[in-house]
Length: 147
Image (tube, rainbow, N blue to C red; front, side, top):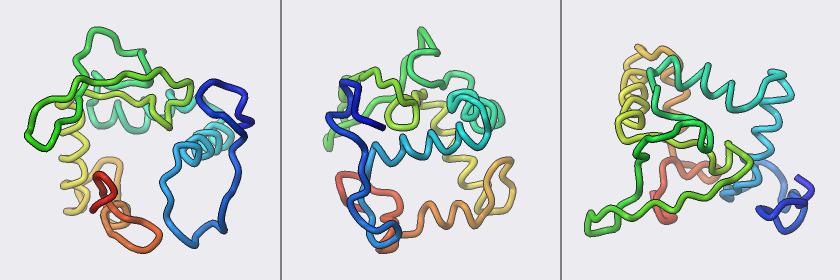
């Protein structure tokens, strides 16, 4: 958080009043990671593994490169062609270190659909509604700055 790594060129700073506007922030996810680790007294990677990956059967997912010999999901351009994945190595799993496969990602989508029906193992219908509802503070699901 002090900006003492090659991944952050300065310390993380609050630039506005919390709750007033949405701004995507990788550093914000770093703060959330620290909060999770401090409260649960466990490494973030272990929490994600035990509370998300294992319950959803996401056995080919992990933090950074703890999952080897797996073809990870990658983006596609607007013509539908696969974009060669750029695989950065960040020391912060919450910011850019969670990796998954297409099959495991679909497990999350199925879980979201089940949660809407009240049948989720890990999410409530309200959680999904909050994640997918757009507001001035939460754009919901977005790609390239658009919902």
